[in-house]
Each structure stands twice: as C-alpha cells, then as structure tokens.
Image (tube, rainbow, N blue to C red):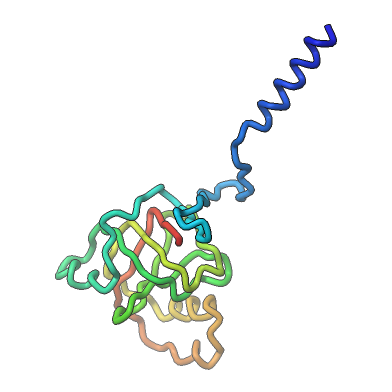
Length: 170
C-alpha cells in the first residue's frame, strides 16, 4: 500500500512539473515571450499571433495607401514612444518617415512602457484619422511632454494612424 501511495505522489509531482513555462502575465494579457534565434534577444508577441513575413517599412505606407482611406497591412518600424500611463499606444518610425501612432484593437493588449528603441512588426488596419486637439494634448501628457509643449497644441491633426491586431516586439 505504501508503494502505491508513494507512486501516486511521485506521479502527481512529476505531472505538476510538466515542463510548461509558468505564465506570470496578468489575467487578460495575451503577450507571449519566446527567445529568438539569437539567445541574447527576446521576442514578445501581443494580441493575435502574427509572423514577420511580408512586413513592409513604414516609409512605404503612404505610397501603398495612395488615395485609399484604409488598408490592411503589416509594417515594421522602430518604436519612438510608448504611452507612459499604461502602454495603450505607441509611435513607430523609420528613417525619413513621420511617426505613426498605433493603438491596439479593442484595447485588448498594451505595450511595455520601456519598449522605446525596440523594433516592432505590427499587423492591422492603417487609416486616415483626424486627431482632435483634446486627444493630441492627452497624448502629449501621456508621453511626458512639458506643460508648455502641451499648451502649444492648438490645431487638430490629419494623419495616418494604425489599429494593430497583433504585434511582434523585438
């Protein structure tokens, strides 16, 4: 009988240590961190799981948009800024490109606040948007701009924007 109980205990112990990585992400966080081929780098996935293939540089977005007001596309760029309140938006750029404001579909996921300087692959909807003065001021505050810089915002801004359904963070 002792052998049976001991065997059951060992089996339960081994099953509980089944090799699955523990996910310490908060409930509802759909990010997954996996090591890249370069073991010094970490690749993280947010939102829908996407791949890097067929991503274009942000500098090509205006040409690709043409006279359309909305397209589905996959882009690659460097993160210039991230919302410092909770990571609910980011700005991507490439050399020669205007920063592109990126929000996340249904606010279903957010970026790490320290992601500036990293490369991101984003998939989703690029569209023409008019950002109100109130929203521009809120974005400036979220980015840590000074009161003087925020006060200088007096005109709405028509610009390209992006709603990401999935992000790869490198």
